[in-house]
Image (cartoon, rainbow, N blue to C red):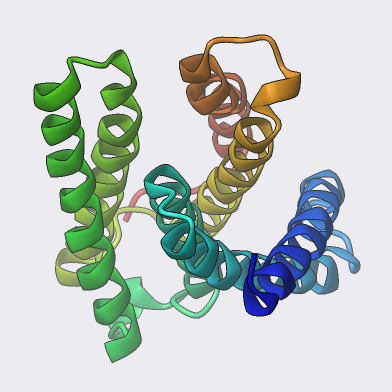
Amino acid sequence: MGTVLKAMLIVHVIAASVALLTGALAIILKSNTPRHKPVGRIYFWSMTLVCITATWISVAKNLQFLFLIGIFTYYATLIAYRALKLKELHRGQKPHALDWVIEGVAGLSFLGMLVFSVVVYLQSQSSEAIIPFVFGALGVWGVYRNVRAFIKGPTETLYWLKKHIGNMCGSYIGAITAFTVNQSSHIPLNPIILWLGPTLIITPIIVFELKKVKSKPL
């Protein structure tokens, strides 16, 4: 193993550990406490390091699934962060060029996941092809909703808060998924359960939290 790859692995493990800790704290503290913002900021930059190192490692070690989940997770992280910068879309605010770049790159990546899942299934008939299909489909749906809001405007007042909560929790799902998959040799469960289990468990919690946001239709 090369020196650069070893360094990337060390940084990845440290950043991922910090992200898992601060992500949980941010969810517990919630947005109405003064410590939520600094903890959330640490989580964001930790996830940025996680994405950079995961991309490097996945390419160096030919780990396609790690690459896919890295894209999905960091997209959710970015959208949650950018939601705080786009609070005035319903009052005529225009999305920044960066927002369009994020959605464009993400859209192509998620479409690539769908194609990848089909290719994997046709070549191997493996049930694991459902993994990139699910993440790709969820990603495409997210991009579609975001682009529609950019063009037509949001449909409710606290759209930005819902997007922030939903995507940060989605980002945390990705972080937990990466952890469970990396520890698969120590967890006696089917790989599909390890990949999709965190999504199935945490998604109802996200729905519950979003229902508590008192947003009004526009």
